[in-house]
Image 1 (cartoon, rainbow, N blue to C red):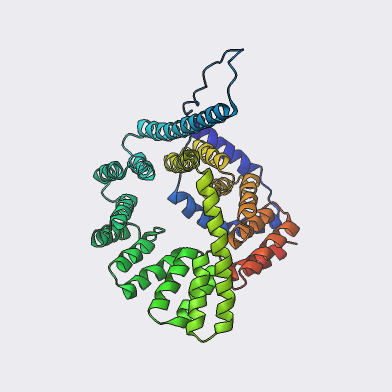
Image 2 (image 1 turned 30 degrees about the vertical axis):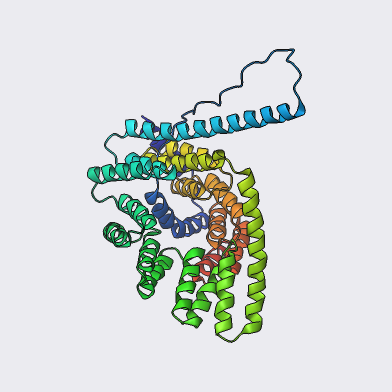
Length: 418
């Protein structure tokens, strides 16, 4: 019944669409985006529900006329109450995450996806053996489950079992050659074995899959620096520092490379930047350590659970439930991008363009340096015949990535709509 209602809504939106030539040209613009959206959604997916975690226990009622306490006793009691409340909230969030997964298992008992997610949650909680048990169970259900191989390989890497990690990653690679992160982990395994030269090809492949990975460019810079290929090291370090956020180690690597190239004045400039960032990060880390509690990590855990649960439900064709799950994740973390990308993609695929635009505008606010977000804001504005806004957004994408011909082509397409 739900699928029939979704179908009727989709048909109504199609019947009500404009037939003007400018609108047709706008539809052509969206063809640039929809294949990308489809890939994003195919990697994710699903439906959502609203499980409720156990609320934090309330402190016991107190007498209206309690005996007076000393200032020291009051401070001790306040600290104890705060610690109790924090532990209770962290426990409630953890229970919420497990409730989501258990609901998934009930809804889709034959699907390996909730089983794999259970392994991921246990790994995040530090239950490594339990995580591996769930991932192996996932492989029993679906022997070609690339993520399970990938995750077990990560455990092997952390244990220093590099040969085993490589074997597992090769199995994952045969199943999904374009899985993000898989080539990076292969490179780490080769580096663990002391073979820097062998680590280069996987990292180059990782960049082909996702070019804007700061840590991969930085790692390539480090390897080329160790191999004495300073021009290549400089290229990757300079690419890395153009991608936010700033990483002190990248500036240190670039300064070292420039020193080897004989550019000592420029090297000192980047070394000073390294010192400033290092000091800033040290202060931030100290503040984080003073204020850290389990609640932040548990919130991250629930965020991951809702995101992945949404993906499972979407793959089962329950689009509205998937959107609900991803919205819960977005509400939990206002600066999270992955769930918003998924929602924007699904909205665009279902011709819900204003809602897709709203998601991409949020993404631009979160990460204004990503040209893809600006491009999609431009294309969606063009789809709704907001030509001035569309041109401004695509121009921003061109400013951020001048060498990308896709943005220039889109800009000309939109101009022709005037």
